[in-house]
Length: 227
Image 1 (cartoon, rainbow, N blue to C red):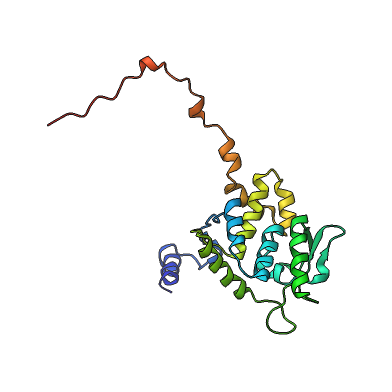
Image 2: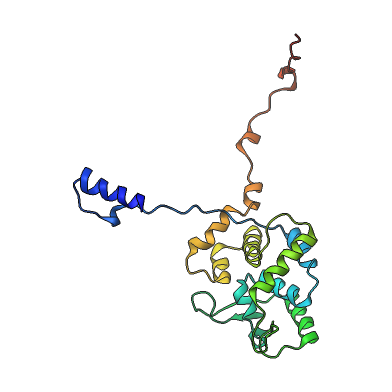
């Protein structure tokens, strides 16, 4: 309120102009880079989940790069083992898409299905006819993180970040990752270029290319002066 009044005074009294809110540049929200789990941390985390169902959910989120809402909304009929894809129905933006179904994940989901034999929702909740809730999975994430001794914050979405970054670091092009993640804008996917470290670490610093002086020309550091 104070800022608005000050701007009105600036326009009306000082600048002698009409109030024009559209001429005021909007402040930019700071963008924080996501914290990325290493492949070893992902494995330690997943192995620390005692519940078969919770582990299957979070393995699916990482293996296919799904949002937690998309993973929990999977139905048994969405698993296409013939084409090795998962059908994500009405993801963000109300758009259907297909994502990869890894052979390793398929084995895990088959083992999981044999235990509970879900009929409709792949991951049913305690309420009949409904899938498991996101809150339940988030709590499982926190418990598993503590068991694994990982200090980085871990949420279901952190596994999606790890999926995209690990693909990028292994050489997958950004456009393919965009399709897998279901991003409308390529710029949204391109932010993972800022956190993928394989290219950065593989690049030689110009400092390392400088000629090294002969060892005899390097003077030893003089001893510190005594009082």
